[in-house]
Image 1 (cartoon, helix red, strand yellow):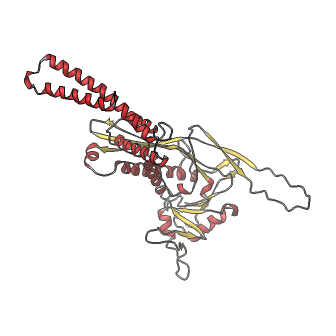
Image 2 (cartoon, helix red, strand yellow):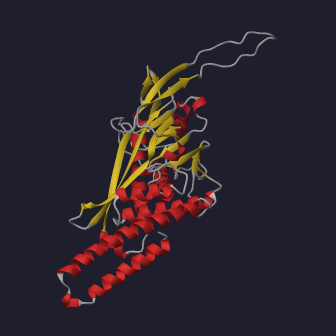
Length: 397
């Protein structure tokens, strides 16, 4: 049957149901049986109409340009994901919606369950609340297994000036490897369904912001202070990578519970010249506030301020030509704490495994009528240089 014929057939059956309902209190058992039969027949007709409309939709999509197909897919993807976060549909239904939309756009079925906009917001928040993360050597992998990552030391070797037809000296370089795992961190937010139903805020942006901030803080803490047990091995805890080669140098302050310019000078001097290229200072809040007040004998500020600093752009300080970046994971002015770290962040590799996974459910908190939104990330990090590539400043007793 044609679509028009099916629609006319459906309208006729609905009219028959209306006539029976109009009888009011005089409906008998046979009428009820007829009503049930009509409902089943209308359901069958609806399925045929849906199949024809879906076929036509795909046919129309085939005539669209690739960018138009992508826009249609993104629209379906975003709206379905919002419905999932609001608890209007189940996770299985969301996946079915995406798989159906895949037919009109060239992506892997089931792979694009989370909209690009959501992932973009997550990444922005992770970077915003991870002050050192954007500077690291970041690699992203799809597999979840252990990744063996090479390390190398070639600082002792140089090229040689040669006579005509002179032999080229072949020098080996020291190599090693580290294993990067796929440790998981996760967080969840609980939102009342009344808030979701009654508010006009964008649930997608709201939840992406919260999850991104939390995951960013967690990754940042792992990169700086992680002990390597089910989390990254942080810069402050990386003492030996291989043999007796130190990856991080410790410099004690000369004066107890006080930082002076000579301490930062000592940190620069402690790092080999070859490792100072691209190096930065990372400072705790109290460390940055203390050093920003330093003045020379003429009363001028010792820390230099970036000429690009504006009202809209934060002030960037530097010492000895090296920028100083605020990092809230570093310590205070207390014995044993580390308020400053100096080195090239590219010597630390952060492995991110798959994009952040997000799931929503209105069943976990069904008694209190709340929706739970959970995000997980898998990552690991290690120092990948076997040279002395970082210096930490410690407050000594």
